[in-house]
Image 1 (tube, rainbow, N blue to C red):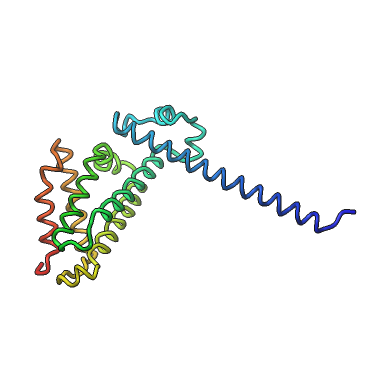
Image 2 (cartoon, rainbow, N blue to C red):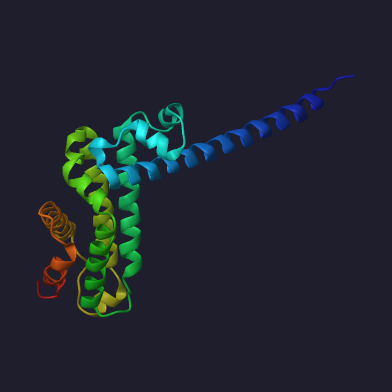
Length: 217
């Protein structure tokens, strides 16, 4: 004799299988996306974004075009995802480089030097930000706003600690954070486009940031 209880158990078992499959598929999609982004980053480093095609990305990732388009609607969307991830990693690297127990000017130095170190390890992505992102239109504006907000939040968090307040350092305002990040980005862009080394302008960048943050600014 069939009972509704039996149907309930079967339905729950089926639902669990469906949920497990969905979780696996989601995990697979994330893995595919990461491989594709890694391949895109490699291609940009070697050939630049202009010459990084979907065909080149999938070849490096050992994936199909279908897989690419299941992860990203187009090449521009993949670039936005790549740069968003790179920005988040940069924020994490800078935050991790700052010792909250160090003197305030040392903390500023640590943050600026971490910015420069990160930019120097990813020169191709730095150039892409300068030369290619503006051509993305609305997607570029959204990406730039998101990236700037992430850096603003980071700067304000780093400057809002008990140690800095004890040293007489007020939390950096939103406007000051925009000036600081905007200045660093412009300095990075000008230096890279001129073929210079960021390391050569690091000390000027550090001193400018210290001047902005110091108690009597």
